[in-house]
Image (cartoon, rainbow, N blue to C red; front, side, top):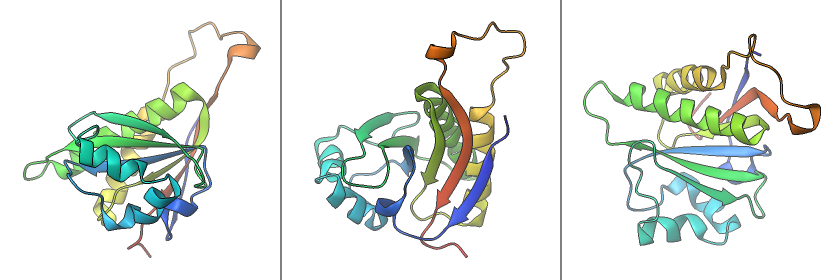
Length: 163
């Protein structure tokens, strides 16, 4: 099933989706765009960064319950420290990891954000989400109806500098 994409401006804390993925490069302090979300999560994001529970290294993930935010779950995805031309590659890889995780938990709708991103980053994230959500099921026996999870079918991009 193909993903449907939507792009909007706004605050990460206001995203109403089963899974919000935040793509972060190697960080030691919380980006300003995530402060309201952090407040809604009781400071969990800033504590995780301060303690070193999440460092933003490549393919690192850290899962949070959505708490009082609109998102049911929040997943931090590490992009590492891209060198030269690699930022788009790291965004694609991180977004693919997010989509696979969303598919695995049966989220259905994903929201993705990457603080400080531009138009090229949005394109890279869209490509990564599409690649990660793809699954070849034509030759597989489907699981019983009760065990099936919703596939990733929609992605919402949340950027504070778009449009």
